[in-house]
Amino acid sequence: MTGQTLRSFLQHAQGRFVQAGIAHDEAELDTELLAMHVLGWDPASLVTRWREPAPTGFAERYAGLTARREAREPTAYIVGAREFYGRLFEVTSACLVPRPETEELVTAALAIGDRLEAAPRIVDVGTGSGCVAVTLALEQPRARIVATDVSADALALARVNAVRLGAAGVTFLRGSLVEAIRPPERSKGAEIGIIVSNPPYVPLRDREALQPEVREFEPPQALFAGDDGLAVIRRLVQQAAAVLRSGGWLLFEIGAGQAAEVEALVDTRLWALRELRPDLQGTPRVAVLERQ
Picture (tube, rainbow, N blue to C red):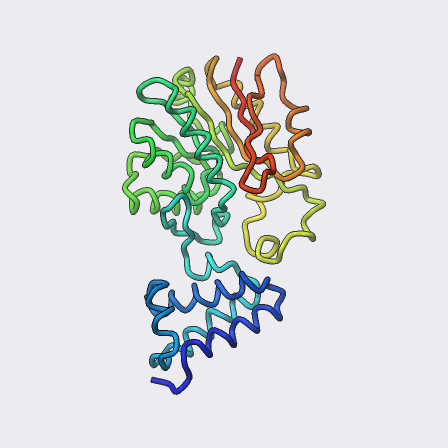
């Protein structure tokens, strides 16, 4: 044991995080998450025991993790996990860190899936960690889920999450966007009821304005999409029209301030824009299109 209390370690780390440019509330939470990761404790244990002397070996392990966070590495990458829709997903730098805004994409897809046939076929394009595909599979067990990604590392991680969380029935395919659906699968395109995606949508011109956690650590191919941020969305909308049946649905996440541009790029001969669903802050976040 050391003479220094856990609380003193956390307070010192929080001060360093704030000096590194991390917001105060986020810094406080991160110090606790990293401590719980080292100790293997839950929040209640940390709160009730943080005045105790730190266990032997804690100082060295905690120092290593806090140094990484001080360098602005995302906490999710450091601890290797992030909660999404009430479940803990493994994450690595091969994928984006799951975000609360993306939960709205899942909620929208579930609502539509409930209105479709007994076994809706749902394709998650650009699955990353698999958080959307796995959540859909677990929340709507009657659905048949296919998840695609261009990254082999991301697909490997998504498979791990699917098996660990009990969604081993998800089918994973490697390839770019909807093109990942191989010819035998594409021939069944009329059966696809919903395509969902959290595509890259950050304009390249906005790169320097991003937080270091995003700009320096998250995979750029999952973030950036041309000068206006809509290059991938344009391809997605075009490709989806070729495989979705009439009455099928395409749902995708968009960036703040992109609603009008997304509405303008939708070909009304092929699609009806049914909704721009807001996130918890009221920002239009999920485009909901129905195939005509």
